Amino acid sequence: MLVRKPQSAPREGRPGRWRTAAVVAVALGLTAGSVAYGAADDPGPGRRPAPALAAVVPVERLAAGDLAQGVAALQRHLEDQPRDATGWATLGAAYVEQARTTGDPTRYPRAEKAFGRSLELRPAASNDAALAGRAALAAARHDFTGALRQADRALAVNPYSERALSVRVDALVELGRYDQALAAVRLADRRRPGIPVFTRYAYVLELRGDVAGARRVLSRARQSAFGPADVAYVSTALGQLEWSRGAYKESLEHFAAALRADPRHLPAREGRGRAYAALGDTKRALADLEEVVRRYPLPGQLAALGELYEVLGRRDRAEEQYALVRTWTRLARANGVATDLESALVGADHGDAAGALTAARAEWGRRRSVHTADALAWALHANGKDREALAYAERATAPSPGYRNASFLFHRGMIERALGDDAAARRDLRAALDLNPGFSATGARTAKAALAATGGAS
Image: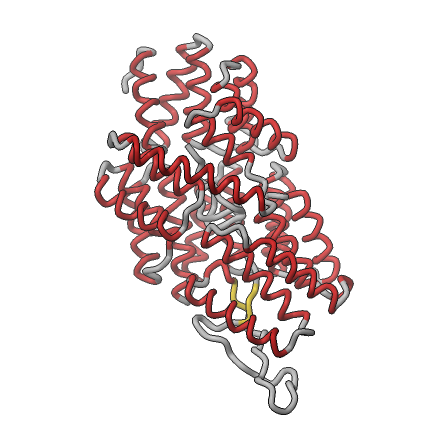
């Protein structure tokens, strides 16, 4: 099963807080649903006025229709004003967000070209927007080392770039450099406090085991959120945090608040579907997850729907979802996205053990986070290498940084059971189910059966 990550990412990410691309906060000169026109640059006689690019709106929280309108307006503007370096950087940022929200990785090469054009028109020494955009693009492609490098370049030009500050936090989190991520998010909070930074602050605290602190930060962010998009974004983050603790009714209240603010907010619908599934309301869970996958066909969402079909005995429909994950993975790789973490988890769970291990080892070579440790442990287990797997499972569930994740505990418990350590297996399987008894439709079912088989109460 794929593991919950923040909305978005990126990581990504992100989030939604499910495993997908990392969270990417970028700025687009739009009002919600429209483009403002102004006279910042005189377009000359007979030319359409350029969009005013001063209004800063984080595109990760724009509805898809608003984002599409903004992209179309920017494209028209750049036909008239092809030497607008800021416009090209903004268009690239919008393409990155479109790729994340639609699941269409073919937009990443478009973003790369837009950022390149911006840097041709305005050198990097004075073009933090394009550099920060490139950082966001690298994070979306899961090149977190490159994302960190580009974010640092952008911050050397503009130390107050919200985009660069945010991506820098994301990159450090995904690289498993948690102490540095905490320092980075504190710096971002001093320089550019706001919703994108608050939600990252909460996730860094959660990764360090401070769930109460994460909840406090998100609650304060919710109080400061006024627009429908911000209310939906923060309410969803609160819902995801409660879901991860097994507080499904509380999570549903937050998802309901998000959908009241923005009925089109897909991460909230996805979260609601997962909460319904955990509560055994499969009819509502299917309705939500099917709608999410129809509009947002990314690995985490496809796998969640496939696993729900699987426990309902609809194996053919489940296999369709897993096949779509593999198709998306091939397409994403062709467009420069590193998909080894997703490939490792899906392969280990759904029949490609050898491929899963190859992917997990490759990802571990690039970044050493608790998520990659867990994926490598699970892939090793799928290949019968349980003694080696246990070391990585222990790393994923170690007291430092302090993150508690039901899927990680489940994986460790199954590895311990395979090694014949029933006492340790009972401890960790029980911990997984106590923490979040509906962490995965198939995983929870397997955990209960394994717990019973080792002499524990299921």
